[in-house]
Amino acid sequence: MTTIGGARQRLGGRFSTTLEAGSLVAVEMEMGDSVPGVVVFASAIEVDILIDGGVVHRTRSAFESPFLGDVPELLRHLAAEARMFAELREGERVRFEIAPGHLAEGKLAEKCRYGAIVISDDQRVLAVGFRKIWPLTARTRS
Image 1 (cartoon, rainbow, N blue to C red):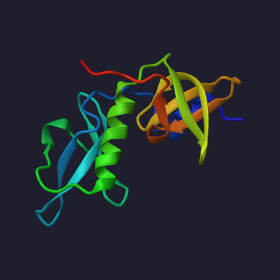
Image 2: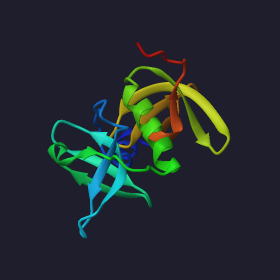
Image 3: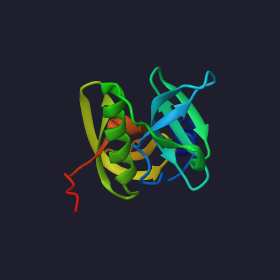
């Protein structure tokens, strides 16, 4: 059985990301060129940016700039998922994937750096990555 502490640790600790999550930004590489990345976590002092290939770069928010070139389709999808996760709130009812093709519903108990701790309707504690959790009801933007 998963404990809340173990789930929290696997997801990077309890944090709430800013709505900067999902932004497409330029990541400066050692050779001086820049590559596109997606902000998957952002706080007032640090930002985690995922680039193609699954590498995460942690930086200070002051050092990021928008990426202006062509962005791979995978990163565009990842950006949309990160934005959706950033908008979720603790206590909200959510739908999430428990196994490929198998969905469940529950309550978002805690937001973490890379996902959430969810209490399923059958009272199981689950660690769910941010790409596998969605609001239960559709949202409209104003």
